[in-house]
Length: 364
Image 1 (cartoon, one colour):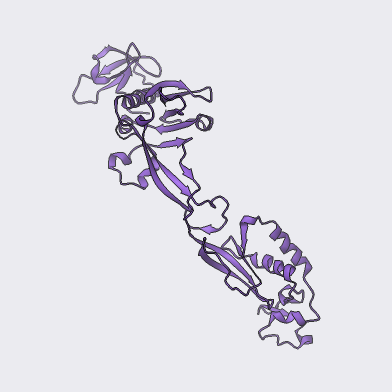
Image 2: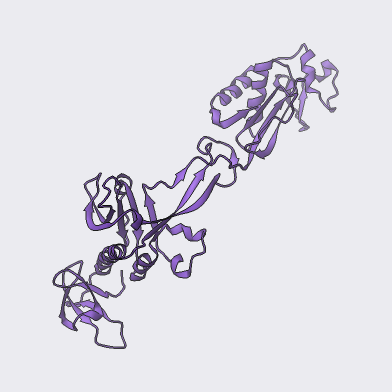
């Protein structure tokens, strides 16, 4: 961190500003990181006033250390000395079927809103370097209520370059992790409170507010699965089997709350939760044959690919007197004495279907 050091620690380890101390070594200050004596360079008007190490060798962690200490002091004082200290985060309400729905859909199937709370309505105290309730580690700040000890506290973690480890973030109750990179970041927090960083995409913040650094909330209730009225256009592959034995499979779309049979007279309709129909037809057609036993040339070992690249044909077309190049009615298999079920293909296809989970398809 190469920024000039404008704050330091005095003899009593209090944070002091460069223009509030005596010049040179008379400032009697030291580095918050390496503890070396500092020189206050605050006498000129051309250069930015700052502290420098007396040895002439600057400590690379000095700025980060003082920034971290400054954040704890400034944010604590802002909370204690004001009637309003807000936190804001995005709240998402998902469709109850969000986790189990397998359809191809556009968007997140949720509604979003902004939750804003004045912490002073709930908490009246703030302390530095307090141990978490559930783990043997310390937090930078702890907001708590001295009047209602049942109210879960809120812990604040500041970081400049190194974020907290996952164990701390997910085991310490309500935690707000805040990234700071300059004094200006701290000033914005003091002025606007703690605002979840990505919210600037959804709200018309001022330029200053949009520059707030990363703020992430852990352990807060920021979602539910109760948005009953949500619906969305979905994509899927629809298979239909008719009483004639003929069938079709094609890509389709529908409102997720209005999915229904396409034809009331069909024997079976299955909507597979994918917009890629490859392999779907073979699974579905044999499932239909297994259930209803209606013969069709599509299931017959004699119905093969043409060597001439003209599609499928019956290799017994001469014996059956069928026009090789004419349209082939696959439903004729119901009366064909040469029908031979392709049992191996059927077994393989049904095995693939058995591998699907109930959330992979909807039978109508």
